[in-house]
Image (cartoon, rainbow, N blue to C red):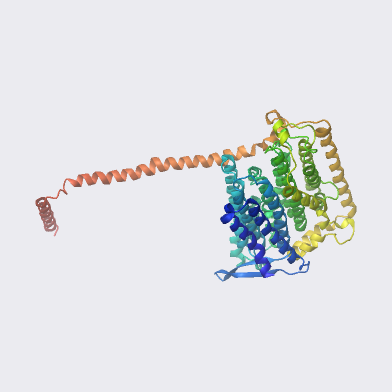
Length: 638
């Protein structure tokens, strides 16, 4: 297993080096092919490890080398192979290889082709470090690596100044969260004298439930998760990150990087179970984030912006599950979300490709008969996220709703309304894009064509996964079979008995009849929303209005409650003002002070120049007078 793990991690790094060093000398198909194959090879190796494991397998620690020792604490650079890390590796490399394949067609005409694939491979390498590392420090290295790759890929078309600003915004806002993560790691090292997961878990029993130190540690780690997983208040970078090429949106901002915060909390379940106060805070932040993002998405006209806010909202659903201790349910939705959201982003890329770069849904319409394969796969993704019965998104989202209901029916009501908003904005996007009459230019209409095979094949694979992905973890109410809670039982070994017990205890008081009622209400809501939106945007053909025509709540939605403008005033302008003040202080005070000292030295030098004239007789005279003066003073004061 050791050699397989090294190969899984190093193959994408090898692809990065090949694309980065030799890519500009090689044909594009060779560069794209190598970059895709190294990720796919890692996926195949991960499957081989997965086949040797079951839900009784204990974690395997692979020590690469002894990193350092400090204050009696030994830190090794190593990797932890368990059910959680292998699940994440399969998602990263499986979906990653599909997105790499898709990118060969999508980026084929771009001049930075080799550079793009080098960045993608480096991202996969960093993400694998993040999820396979055996301690928090290696996780932090991967954490910072994916942040760097995110910056490079969001600002890939750096000639555009706005894209560069979006990349900087993502980088800076992630640094805010990363500071919290780093503080949490340092506190863990101080309190437990360890940073590896197994040792910290063993030493966690020293913390009293809801003690100040455990609250501070878990809150600090959660701040890191807030930044990386785009939760309130550090969420505004994610919609702006749509400036990057569409495959970037699918890989980084739908399927992998933004889920790192979920992984961090699940990996640290032994800490969060001891901090119910922080779990309550997580639930509050999750509900607020999911609600705000869903509200913003309802009146967005950019197809990628709708999906971006949808991602933020769905991450809120996952954190809501974590807030009630449903760790395996959160991971289940993480997996299904990776399937249908990657499908939707790649589907939007196929639409944009067909529309010659157009992203505004107001200038689309009538595409279902022109790009049929894209249309059908996109519809599957829309149905999955909206909650069509038995599709992956419906099953995983329903599990979250049930878990939250067991904790509080009020919180369930809030999430239920957010789920209704999700179906509303997704069907609005679908009907504006694919139904009605074509609203673009004649040149765009003439250019419309289906994407090539290397772009449509990933769509088909992801569509199949979106259809059947929910069967990996069917709820108990459907009866006992090989798929009943399959994923939950698979992940059970990575949860402490306390964490698993909390998850089970939440569901004990919930009868199957209650679950059936909740499921029925959710299904009725889905079909009700679908009928309403279809009638409004499909049958009646309502169009998206220009932003300046929106009034009331619609204007607040399209302007995102002016949060970006508020942040600009509070933070950007303030920082710029401090910068100008510092520049003024430097120029008008420090510089002038230094100049004053310099001018004083120069003037005193000029004054002394009259005495230092090179005349030896004057020097002798002055020296004689000085000696005489010294003798007189000495005589007087003796």
